[in-house]
Image (tube, rainbow, N blue to C red):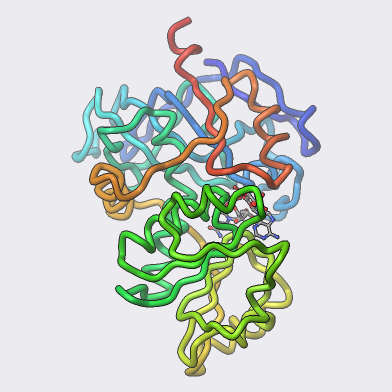
Length: 319
Ligand SMILES: NC(=O)c1ccc[n+]([C@@H]2O[C@H](COP(=O)([O-])OP(=O)(O)OC[C@H]3O[C@@H](n4cnc5c(N)ncnc54)[C@H](OP(=O)(O)O)[C@@H]3O)[C@@H](O)[C@H]2O)c1
């Protein structure tokens, strides 16, 4: 099968589009013909070698985590899926495997793809959508009427966070640059602040939940604008947040938390319902082909994507 692989850590030049062996599904796995993937910053951080302690030195490695595709085979213990089912999920980013014609997925991580969107749109959802959902619901205990601030509202995680928070009837403030103000308003945010003009950590307004989707502000910076029992959630581990995150495990009051997204059937089902009911739109900024994954990584590395960056694998399938 065709895949995008790398044989050593490095910049985008290490990515190669070439023939590799097709994976074999274990008894509790599905073999999926991948129709689309999408880029997450973790994909190029792993390719650059930033997580070598976890990712190790087994090469070649297939890049990518998010997938949407069609089940072609199921292992003998699989009961929930059958060949022909259209599924979406994310693979463990550390092992990768998504930017390929086929991948294997464990039954517990897969879920039926939303019916009203394409594979390209569905592949934009898993990591970013689950991060937003699990952060706001599980770590933030989001409720109707709560004041929620999303820093990085125009990015992959941000677009889902704004829309999910609105779907849960929270009052949402989105933070983005000047050029993305209208975009974030159109996502449904009640208030949009331009970080070039206003430092949200210096205002008088206070929030119940601050989701720093882009890891640009520390808990210490946000503490003053958190309500007494407010929760700060970051998508990125950082040295500055270590102590407050540890103390938050034992102390009451303002809390600092780190979200680590987890792929599971039930939460992908929640996202499917939000998408099928029209409450969440997985907005795709640009779509690249499988051969163009290096260009897609280069664009993601600029940090300026507006929504998600998708990879279409349909043309390879039809070859
Ligand atoms: N822990 C987890 O499970 C998990 C899961 C997913 C992602 N992440 C991490 O979360 C981070 C964000 O991921 P993503 O997919 O959302 O990234 P992304 O799509 O690449 O984010 C791009 C967005 O970031 C915004 N941005 C850049 N600088 C900003 C600033 N100073 N303040 C506010 N917004 C800013 C940009 O908006 P402007 O152009 O308007 O500035 C752009 O729209 C990454 O570091 C990723 O590794 C972690």
